[in-house]
Length: 80
Image: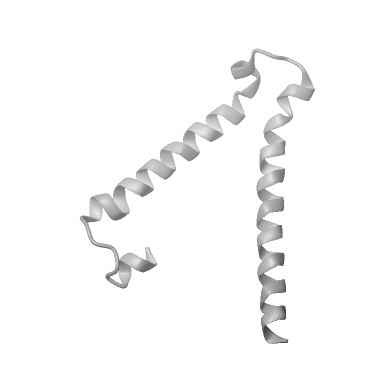
């Protein structure tokens, strides 16, 4: 969005703004439906199998934390 606002992205509003937002919303909806119905998707009633989607959320949270921490370390190293 920022690049489009600065005039760096050329193309129609559909191709640069609307379609990516619609696609992202559709992917998010599909992902949430899969997580909400994970037991039915896998055909398993085992709690160990049904907890697996939490690993995805934990990994995403750790990745966000690690990225912020690394950015803070990079800034600190640049200031020295």
